[in-house]
Length: 324
Ligand code: GLY
Image (cartoon, helix red, strand yellow):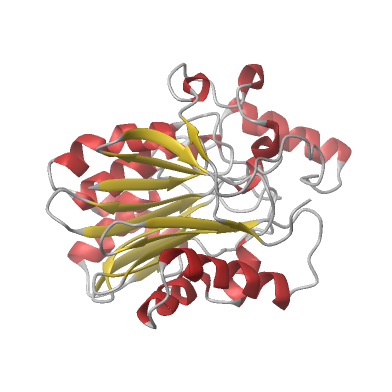
């Protein structure tokens, strides 16, 4: 029985999901973890806190997966806050896997899902600043404090319980560097032994309207096969999509790789496949069917949040492809 979510804010997402993990409700757990991140105003690449596209409008993407035969996805929601909840409706009540754009919002309306405001005042202010100042979001600064790989860290409750992730310097500097890539990906092995995953994002800040990244695409941002295990991704979607990242990790496990080697293979594949820029980051989180987990990242600053019968903690990636 375990839940693992991307980034340090995943500690609070895991807490929201934990009662469902214990009760053997893997899908509810995935939905609760992602919904927590969607609603958090200080998580600025997911949901309400998410930064808008270049037109100033937020669009949200997400998916959920139990198996190749049971998955659902939505992209480009502009009126509904919880893409994973809408994706679950797609999975459970249609013959399809993926709905996109205004029709995905209409589908959510038809299923009684309430419309919500997606643009927070902070995200609106960041957009207006971006319009005034232009340029790209600089994620190459602030390289201090990169942790050693392989280490397990005790839970830092400063960003686990007091409601502040980024305010007051609570987030470690090396992770704050990637705050605009903080898609939530979540993998659960519940008390009944059911494996499930979910992924939710607002995508790249100030993206071209209509852009969809890896997160809602089955096999890219998320893949789960109960015979093997699951994987999810976070970071620059375009890098992850070019290597079918989550599928690559699960297929490595299917061939016999352990979780550590599987995530390492995906991170190395990205490092070798692109002319990388300083702002590029990607990370893969895997869970095998026994609940073993590992993550690998392209650059330092990524960590995984874990909760299980031993409690809550953050874990450093087992491999960083490009150490600073
Ligand atoms: N990884 C999220 C995105 O690029 O949209």
